[in-house]
Image 1: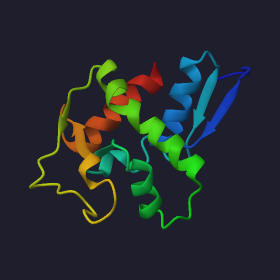
Image 2: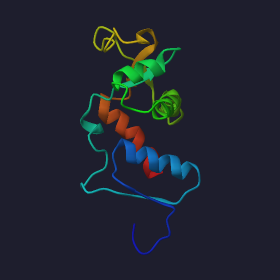
Image 3: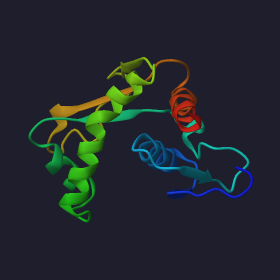
Length: 143
């Protein structure tokens, strides 16, 4: 960004969380800029496996509560669950192909916790894990 511009939101950090905040704000009509200390955007996402998680079912909140050792307030966990519910649909709307993970390759982590039957792992299938996920995020962010 050059010159002086009026912004509604300045996002500090260009990883997945910062990109998500910026994309969401821009979709709601805000004028947004993202600043990043590194010479590239993406944080650790391009170097990750890119596995994503969907939690469904009546015990999803209880599962998150157990995973966070009951240290995260329920309203925060509920907001997280609400956000998770739309991730796969958003990726698809951005043109990404998503595929469920092979349970032999990525088995259900913590199968003894509540809600194990409502866990689905998936990834963006348009290339290797994290780079494919970041590619979708970066296209939306730059748009």
